[in-house]
Length: 304
Image (cartoon, rainbow, N blue to C red; front, side, top):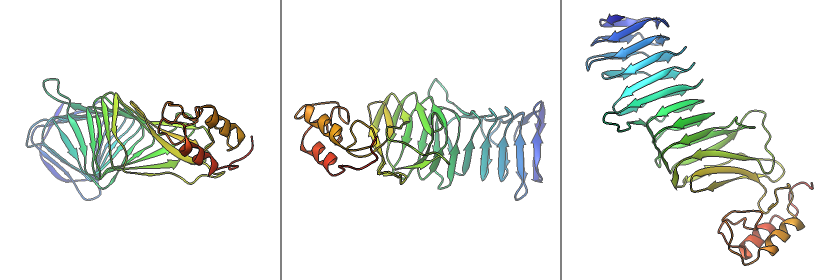
């Protein structure tokens, strides 16, 4: 174990996998454009401890333990099952990258979960990993390119934005939230490179104990064959589904079979948005609005 004294104007330095470094009040300041690579254990232990580098790269199961003190960086990268451990509430206002099942652990006191607040206008890339606590996003574009688990709650404020990749199988962006999810702001859906969606493809974007609010604006990719992407808000999930409006049996074509779905359930109360029961309008009642959705898209798509 090494206790580090103040060092300024450093070139790139590394904390090796077997290394343990305790910053007990020093200032470790990198020259412009330099970075620190942490593959071992680095701890900021006292209020006077400072870690200031343009890039902090935690990799190869490394641990960055922020008990107290200050971190000032333009880029924080967490990769290769690394961990960023934070005591108390943390506010991070620069570029954060999570990949390779990395983990952010928010360690509160008295059993109270702490909160990570993202307030930067920069992009935050989240590929895979866990946030052990609550996540609040404001004025931040979260690029969600894999599954991120949140053991607390998720709150996106009006200035926040989530950009989620849609891909085949499990290759899509997703938040799995143990607690509640409160939504506002923007949702942008992009296609994973080379992926061509088909009618009926479904993507679960968020799961939570409960969902409140909706995204203020949703931007979906332009698809061929009259396909579009519809967002559905359920009690405990937010789901994106590829469909042609009015294609109730999801065979890729709006025609007589879809008309029969509406007529066979006419004037019935059904589960809101259940296409097979004839409710493309999503209001939970099969009637003239559903007929008009189907009629306005009659003969669209490709015959099965």
